[in-house]
View 1 (cartoon, rainbow, N blue to C red):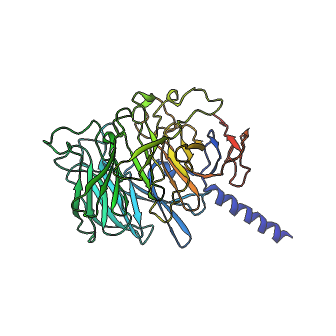
View 2 (cartoon, rainbow, N blue to C red):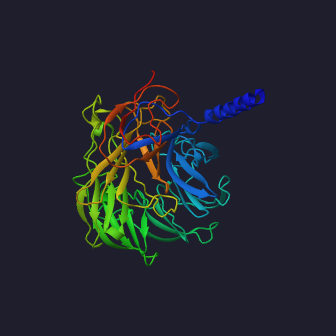
View 3 (spheres, helix red, strand yellow):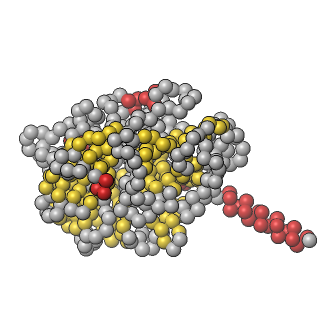
Length: 461
């Protein structure tokens, strides 16, 4: 009997030690049709862009960073207990905010830190794209580097094969343009083609529209590529001849919508003849023209047309502000679940996952593309510690990126806090309930809890 008691005690002690490694989920969030599954503070390095792979039953999430130079690998096999496995230092004074993975190849963007974002213009920085072998998931091996000769690349595309598709700033051009790079020999990448909006090249007239910049990533579907070209709008190119891309379609958004990064992301859904586009909010407190998140008819790629706008997020009942413009920080769209070529990312169905800065994550049903509707959301609590220079006016949540894996787990990052792991619980009649403050995961429903509308209470100071 005594031995049994000791054995049980040891088991419980081991369980407590195991659970101690899980970071407590911050309290104070608000959600509808979304369950909070887990959280990691990422060793005090807020994450930014993400990608994911699965190997032998283990799931590895790779993250870039805004305020730290390098990349983090997190084991998310058990989403309720994500574990930081490794931080890989990147080149100093250089943005390392985005990566793309296909098979055992990963590419990571390198870029000069934008003014005001914590870089030091007096110190050197790296730029371009690093090419890695990640067959050993925890020990990426650098194979080569492509350099632009300018400030570097922002959001790039790689879905396997010989070509990278880059949003790159190149000598002799204003802002980022579209560049195709052959990495058949990753140690010696070679430019294969490029395209730009007329007026971007130095000396070209007339000048390009305000805010003309390829934000990327270029989204490749067969021999077509869809470009999110900021204030110049959405472009569709034929790249059957990669050395000579040709424009086949164009849709302008600005005016009336925000000109700078007026088109931030384009995700085509060719089997449904539609594309989902959005801009990026830039100025805090909505001190700019209206942002957009929309559905475009691409039945005729030479004549894309606007079909519908995604509904504007509204504050939850009881919020101390009437509009998200009053909350502080940026309010507007940012990133979608983009890496659809990745077999470990949820394929595009009727749901669109879109981060909205201070409005958190928004989930839309586009089953009827002319009548999209919001079916879920999650507002993280405001952070308690500042890691970077933004937001400037008030330290509020600023949800940055979203990735949904093929298991249905949703990962979101924030400018000044860690990684939230969520699950969409589906549509049904909802009721509001306030959860008590108790335990490490106070106010958080378990993954198996009833599907209810939840207000996550703020516990403590």
